[in-house]
Structure formats: C-alpha cells, structure tokens
Image 1 (cartoon, rainbow, N blue to C red):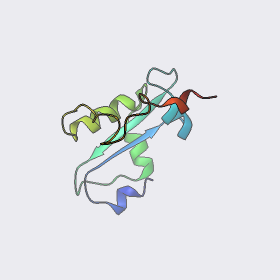
Image 2 (tube, rainbow, N blue to C red):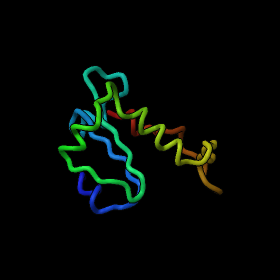
Image 3 (cartoon, rainbow, N blue to C red):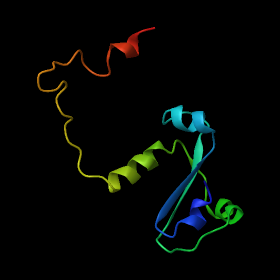
Length: 104
C-alpha cells in the first residue's frame, strides 16, 4: 500500500495501524493497546520513503477510527435521514438490520 505514495501525485492521507486487518478494523475505539500513525501529503508534495515516513510520523494512542471519521466528515455532505424502508408497492419486511442478523 505504501507504493501509493509514488504512484499518486495527488493529495494522500496514509494511516499505519499497530494491528493487522482484524485488529485494526474490528476492534472498537477505546480498545487498549492500539496506536496508529497518520500523515497527510498535499498534491505534488514531497514523498517520504517508508523508513523516513516511519521515523518522522509519531504514533498516536488509540484507535484510528476517530481520525478516519474526521477525514470522512471533512469530505462529505451534511448527514441526512435515510430513505424509508421498503419500496413503492413493497412493504418493509422488518426494521434494519434485519432478522437474519439475530439468527444463530
């Protein structure tokens, strides 16, 4: 994934987490022993090599989720209410997330 830095000359925000895929994605904010490194680069900005990036990007304690939420919020339209369940001529079967979620 780090190759994005040399393949893209646009703005880039790169996050490196302390856990693997499951630990970084599934573990909720507030989970102990998590940290991440985050660095943004402007369009056509200087590209750091992986060792330089790691050395110059300080770790931050906690989950990267709040940082990701802030990144998304800065690039998103205001939140709106979801559309109604069902469709014209079709009633909703049940409320979200659906009964299959609770089936064992």
